[in-house]
Image (cartoon, rainbow, N blue to C red; front, side, top):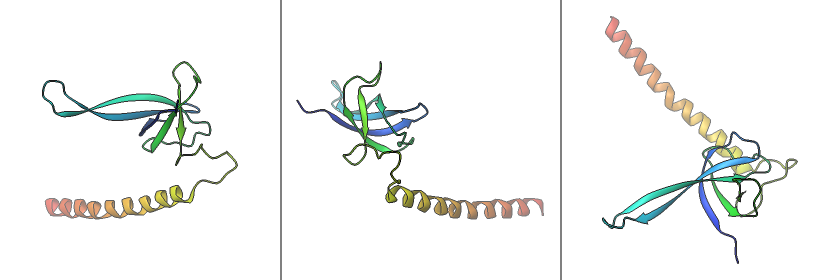
Length: 122
């Protein structure tokens, strides 16, 4: 029997070798026949602490690892890289690209606030 694979968003990564993943699914309401979102949190094993909160990851069903962990975090269909391996270039580029954009977005607001304060005072 094949192992189930679910996709979700990492919610918490505070524990060692564990990540909490929220998996959402659409369900039709029995009376109103409207689709509603249901979510469930799964504890997944992350051997190298690679997953960070906010990452979209896939989890695969596995043998029981602890009392609550019965899932293993997957990365692009493969297991996480070993500690000696370098971080994938896509993740580095994404992090570098996000920082300057956020800094640029904040700068005009600060100037506008300073200008409005100067108007109010003078």
